[in-house]
Image (cartoon, rainbow, N blue to C red; front, side, top):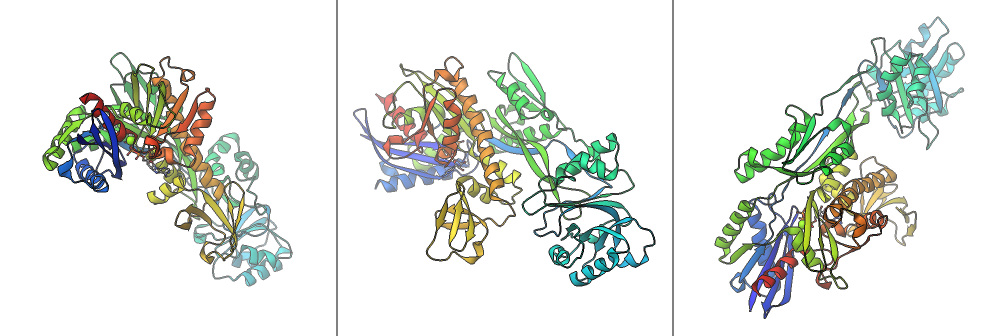
Length: 605
Ligand SMILES: Nc1ncnc2c1ncn2[C@@H]1O[C@H](COP(=O)(O)OP(=O)(O)OP(=O)(O)O)[C@@H](O)[C@H]1O
Ligand SMILES: [Mg+2]
């Protein structure tokens, strides 16, 4: 009889399965999970390994002395880094724009005229159209009185206000005009310039200023000039109010920073793609090459910086020359980065196109042997580097009640999405691909402009609701839940995360719909893309339709919507997918660790 442990070092978690083996039989005793220490496949993993093993032993009432053998996965395919770079940088110069969503602008419609400080209205002699600029020291009462007084003499078409007074002024006006308020940098508003103020109805968005031809009409621009205001119009889409001011010195300059090329290299063939062409083109180049030797970025460009950083980090950690570090797969995803508008007056943002990249470094058996040796010395137990992760995962997945060969699995972890198929005769074919749960979290963080990675992780994992009154919330799916006791007033009217511990308000100014849409598309972009890519590669015919059943394992299979998104996508290929339940008790967790135990016992027979 022997006590053996299978240990799966992942990018996020280190999982253990502990078992007693006798006469070729296996009896599982306990399992455990801790956070991986350091980057997967490097020596820093040992602390986590040790902790996870001792905890699993403790659960089974055993100690290290009882342990006979440990098997660890050939982990190394390390996800080096996930990087995100803007493709283009648009600088809006000279033209000044204010396009924000003050919660309460005043009036509705569009007004066009020359900007003038409110205190200068008395000096006007001509009968032009004007937009009044109201500094903070003028109260809403006084502002309304002045506008009412002069409205009969000059044409006041709109107002730009520093304070949050839009509605208060509007309520006191005899003739209503659109008013944009909360303009932080009011002193920077250029005076004597042609400008347009637009306010939409409650719940609506600006229509004229969010359309380049709308701006062109208002300011009488020619077709070349209209092209230049595209970034301005784009920045204003979705806002309830906006101001655009035409300044005499040109309008917009766009500067493109070279995103650079990515080169995919195999022994037979090379493919080069410009990152500017977007994720789809990059992925089709990657998918066109069968056994990738290395992936390189053009030096001196964004792409180069991104991939060389991955190489550098790995080289430092493993004490190898950067040239020895090979990137074996890459997932590119189209995304957006909210960018601050230069020339904006109220800290406006607009969404700039970008490509996010997850890169995977080739496994290094030598590193794993070093880890095994060090662990073995530390605890005095034989440690073996077991099989390939995806091969082990499928062995573990087959312990799910009701499964049988032939079978395919998807292991959706933090860094990589792995797939393998086992045929009737037990032959296994597997693949590791870059991009999984961490990439989803990063996309959510980036696209929503969050500071905090933990908040992004929480948004990924938990459904949302809107607190509509102190006694009821509306769930994502539209259903309403009532409460007998009043909810906390702090969360009233907020979007909240429904965590086990309670409702956590999201303090960021983000709508429920926006968060849901970013969350879902991020999951789709990473997992649906990778599920199809991975299964195609392991299918005996490269055709998804030849796979009948797919069992999903790994931490990301615990997600409340990822399995459904994948099931839906695969159903188009007549593939049936479901979540694993390892050994009938672990859910989708512990597949690789369980597989390692089973394979150690098989080998001993
Ligand atoms: N309840 C949950 N809902 C959604 N996602 C979850 C949940 N629990 C864990 N995850 C995600 O699962 C991922 C970790 O999965 P897992 O532990 O299988 O990865 P790993 O094996 O460490 O990584 P890899 O296999 O890439 O080396 C993380 O991205 C985490 O955000
Ligand atoms: Mg894993």
